[in-house]
Length: 227
Image (cartoon, rainbow, N blue to C red; front, side, top):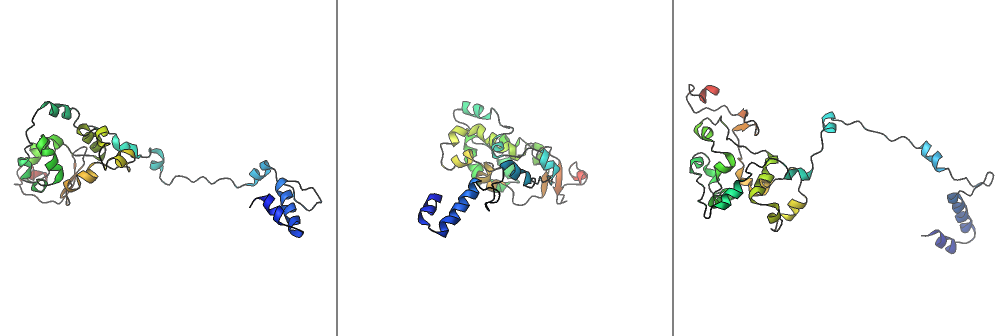
């Protein structure tokens, strides 16, 4: 309710209270009048407690830049130029993944494989020939290419340009405002991720980090001797 409305509706002692309140707000009081003078702004500021500045709990977090959603579209394009080469082929031959299916038969019928296979995009294009990996029955040798998160989106967009994706249903929100670390394969490669991993490598260096200790090859072989 505005002050003028309050005055208009009040009478008698109510109006007197309003007058005192108005004088107090305006700083019209004088010594001895019974109405306190308004406190100067500078004085009020001096009496306010100093703001509490909390020390960062994690010094590392304080020095490292915060990862933002925009970062999901930056990184290394592992297939740079591949799409241009594929487009030169009028009728590309379907990719041959049969060598990989010997151990990874579960990928034969998954969506990511089936969509890319007819246009010549197979296991080798994304993971490298990986002959040593395929020949190592102990599984100690990693594929030639493994995928860090910050390589995924920018590489997918080599063949699926951002401007083309923006015209498709279901991609606008992701392109406009993605979550930090959100990648294409969260939706399109959910079944391409192994549910159980018996070997875990550093995706950048290929260093073996964890394994279940099971060995299938002769201890005298290079792979068997690595146990």
